[in-house]
Length: 108
Image 1 (cartoon, rainbow, N blue to C red):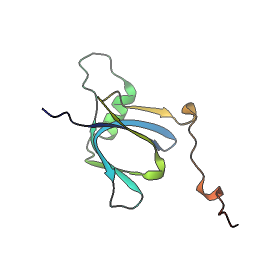
Image 2: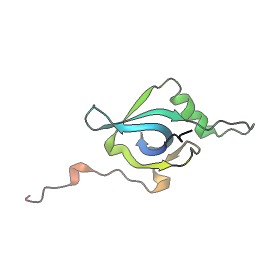
Image 3: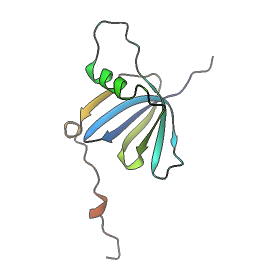
Image 4: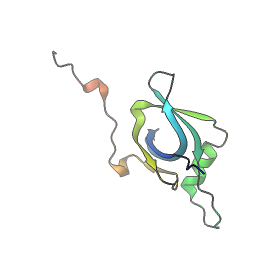
C-alpha cells in the first residue's frame, strides 16, 4: 500500500503561530494564497488531551479547505508522520512579520 504524504504547515494567524498537519497543500487559484486540505489531527487513545490541539480541532472541525495568505506561511515540511497540531504565541518563537511597506525600491 502506498504511503500517503503528510505536510507540516506553520503559519501566522492573528499574532499566533499555527502548526497543522495536512495531506494536501497547493498553490491556490486565488492569487497569493495556498490551499490546505485534509487537515490531520492525532488520534488520541489516552485520557490526557492537549488543549492546543483540541482548540485547533474545534476551529477546523467543519473546514473542507483553508486558504492561507502566502505571506503568512513560515514553513512547509513534508514529514513521515503527523505530529501534534499546536498554537503558540508569535513572540515566543521570535517570529516577526516582514513589513513590506518599509522596503524601498533600489532606484529610490
